[in-house]
Length: 265
Image 1 (cartoon, helix red, strand yellow):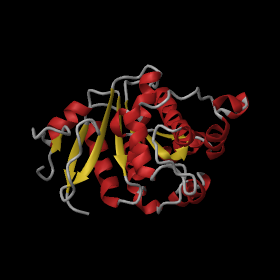
Image 2 (tube, helix red, strand yellow):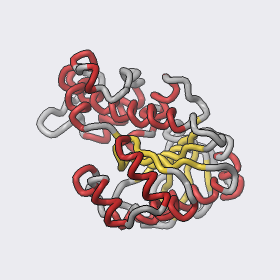
Image 3 (cartoon, helix red, strand yellow):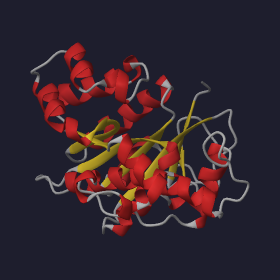
Image 4 (tube, one colour):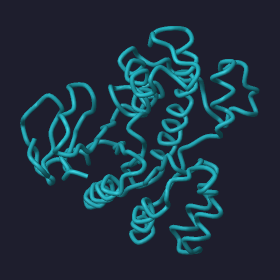
């Protein structure tokens, strides 16, 4: 894979930055994966978002913020608070915890371009309750407006099994199709459903925006996660894009829709 070019996994056909952005801009939802602690990936996300903004209006949607923070994010974009207030009022250190310096360039980009921001996350307690007792065990008032997640397909379950080493510490399962591991995946699916639900709501905004999701890779690969839940609620114009440093093996067919090759980190 050549540095700076885009590819479809499994293909050696190169796409330029301009061609890839033109293709991405045809989608209503573009999901940009990340490793949360990588500054180079956040810089890549901002470059892609800036290119897409030249094609259509954007809404930037972040895993890092709970959906309840949308009014605060609107104040930030409008210029009504400083960075310290944004981080304090969204409880950044409690809810997310990764160094804010990694993400602030993205937040400044939204503010400087007047691009609306949305939060995608739900309450961690909801995730815990579903993992423990299933969706029906959660009182209606505690569901945050979400609907039950569509059960994940086998490739995504196997990916999550490999990613987590079989589940949470002390409760690992050697079988990705076991009932024990399913309870763990069931909890993970609440996050996927929350992200998808709030992305779908953002799509209803006027102006035909592209909703750009800034989301960890673990929620995006193998046709599962957020795109799987979006399809279940009727949103199908979705493209998943991931970065890959040129010193790593190429991604496999089916792992994502598009990948751009970045310098070694």
